Length: 69
Image 1 (cartoon, rainbow, N blue to C red):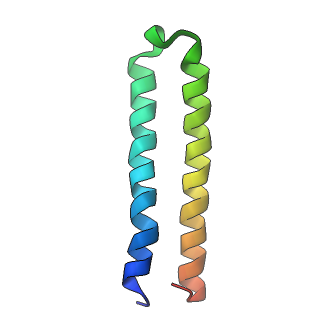
Image 2: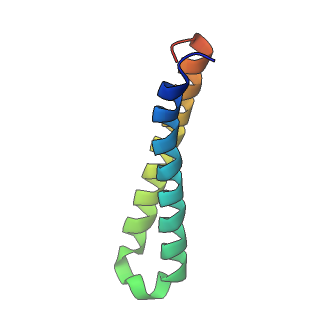
């Protein structure tokens, strides 16, 4: 297990982003009628954030497998 602190420094922010994304989805679903036309904005932001999170986890996994962190 090489450089444990660096792994945590990359993984912990991604976990917080994932929690933030889930909270945006829950907020959007619970307030669907009250948000009006901004529903699409929240959903597009949520999808974009999810893609960024997936890319981050993929990049970290690739770094760990190659031995960089």
